[in-house]
Length: 115
Length: 114
Image 1 (tube, rainbow over the protein chains, first blue to last red):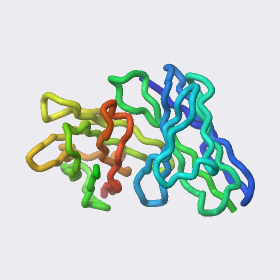
Image 2: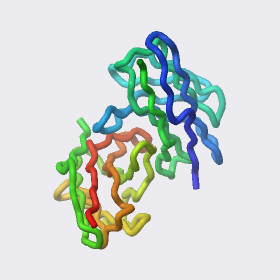
Image 3: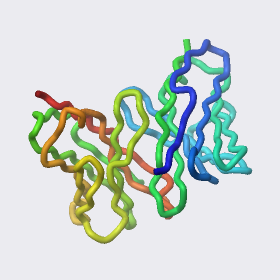
Image 4: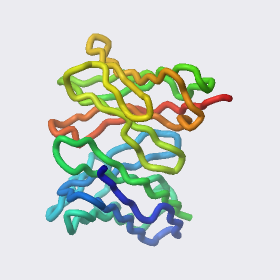
């Protein structure tokens, strides 16, 4: 089945630094990938839609300059949390699907802790 | 606006007992509905989905769900719970025509007692 891989699974960084999270579709190509954020004991909230070869589409309330998204190839999207602060600490999950008839498949997520 | 409600934050079930997790949605058009399961620190795994047709859908791991339009519900069931089923369960509705954008419920944590 379709596999979405995320890296790293955990990252700890200091305030003010930037962190890059990778999302790869391992056995299919994805022109679109989705980034979600999950706060502790809460549900997933869609942050942005990553589009291969064009700008990402951000959901209302999500800072574009804070969460930089790049979708440089059909199998890779990256999310960079810039100038991270403790309130950015969260669980970030990406998703993608092989075709329009398939449901979304999710990566295993990245636990970001900003100290 | 589209929304998904999972009224039970926690549910505890004895191993071997039956399970039903509730999900209600609010969506103007024909809904695309999903149930995902998340183990601690992990991503989400799709259990089953409803797009159209038979309102009782079968999924993986012995789970099933029934779509009831009149009640705007999509409850998840399993006849006999195993200890390995302990996890967080999320109901979601696809809110665009390609059902790529999902709106999730707040989740139900399932605890399985011996």
